[in-house]
Image (cartoon, rainbow, N blue to C red; front, top):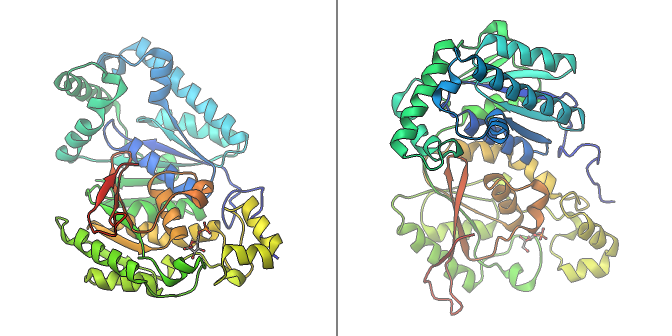
Length: 427
Ligand code: F6P
């Protein structure tokens, strides 16, 4: 009776058959790698086999990491040859990977001239791969300077180089690229332009499911640092009985946690936006926090279908086949008339967009399976790892997005004696 996704595609629902290459374009320090990794994280989480091919990594691996800025000067013939060779190596690996089952590749390099872009587009066209250029344009000196400080000065290109010297060299490298840079336009083909980190997004000839989703995703980008707090509701009556699903109320220990959560939130520098599911246990928790909250149906716990309200032991004795099937394939297993983890990820996509868009601190009071899926996205975990990610009760998981991922801290708000002293641990 249970239904599993097709093994031919790991996409959770509708499979895409077209192979796609998103080709980054932009001067150095315009956030290309940030965007490339973020897009890869999003598409992988949705179940697409996605990989980033970073030409800088090829250069460091094959030529060593310490090239002076003059290496990037277009008048440097030797530098040009070496850089083209690295671009070709990355391209041929990318084409091979797409030919062997990869679905979406992201080719991360400056690709700053039309000639270079045409070369990449032709190579992809020969093997039936669709190309969409993603150009990142930013002329805001503060943003560029912040990006150089946050990433480049700590890059392997400048290991053991004083920060000031690294920044000065990098600025000269940018100037070399700027001399020959040609903005993407209609002659290049299909493109998405991201101007000033998503303030303006331009899409040219973008059609098809994935590229269109991506435009929408890119529209929600910003770089404002803020914490995202994930927490399960306080302990519920069903938690005590070991029953899954349902819509039971908090126990007195659950209420104590809600009060500790309220204290935790009061102690923060600014009040968060609060989201809950539509189930009582999350709403009762949020009410105690005493801030306005938005209930989202999409945040409801995984639907256990015909198993809702049972204990795991009851499922094992009453439906041993279902029990065994879930143990064997927990990610893809769909409860009869209910959901799988893959289904949960699919319904959380709009939540991800809103998380990305929100600039204020955010408190999400939800459930074990749903928070596993959100955590997997934020922490770049394979979706298949979701079903076993630890999301304990009575713990706030603080995730703060940084340049290339999230920093994590965990706060267990109830001690063994149920005191409300927070203890912190890093994961
Ligand atoms: O037990 C609490 C709970 O939130 C259930 O309602 C839900 O079915 C379960 O956790 C999800 O966890 P798992 O996928 O490990 O069964």
